[in-house]
Length: 388
Image (cartoon, rainbow, N blue to C red; front, top):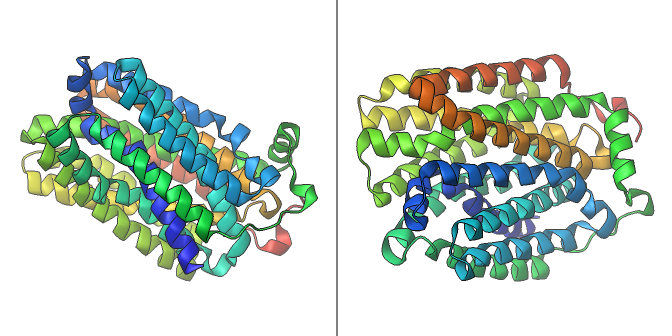
């Protein structure tokens, strides 16, 4: 599995870089297009709403197999990146972001279900944590490279590189992943998906938790690039480097999550880290007096958020083992809706209440999400899980 996990992580790194690159570089993209920053915020919201299609696309790997869907999603991402290269306009960027968002919601449930099929639950936290390092890698590796590319070749350059690299990743996956046969009873229709969701209320609770956690993070992160640039007068290269530092912190959190949840239990670790993450959201505005203080607090915040989020993934994969991709697709859709709500609310809160208002809102929403998880998202042993 090491080679397979590495290939999946590399492919997911490119997808996550394409997804995350807009946050620190929203001002640069707006300048390149000659539009207001708020116009790019709207495109991010449209992209996030594309994630609501996850319950439609998520079960595709149940019908056609994990490997083909993983590869198709990677190629779709490459196609999406190239749209804005040949159509360098506002709606060209919008189309690129939306296709990237759709590719992401196809890729992730299939990949997570693949790992759920092949890795025992006792070791699944570490396996999923490895692939989740690609989320942090989108900032640690991707952001400095994106900042350099934009500054050197222009705002479209990162999409050219990402498109080409994704095609190479698809070839790597084709050579690396074995095709695992799937049983006939796993050929799910949309009606089957809806029935599974109705029969297992824990899916709704998990979806609500994911929605709230992602909403809190989006309220904060959609404006943090603007806040950093305005507060500390950072250049594109410096902003990319600062984002890379945050990405390094996220990788630390993801690695810690993999070991902590397998050793100390999924729920206790998630609840503790989530509460500490909420506290970090509240503290961050008071660090604006110093770039060093702000970066240290952002590092701490990012570590706790990643432990919360990544620690929850292996828990979700075992809620309904007979329909893992359905559970993960619903959770992914809920996360996308949370991002969409956060990307709508974040700029409004930032405009009317300042960064302190953004931090208070993120704190409250994250705390509510942890309460939902603590109350309703229970960890089941395989023997106690409901029949599929």
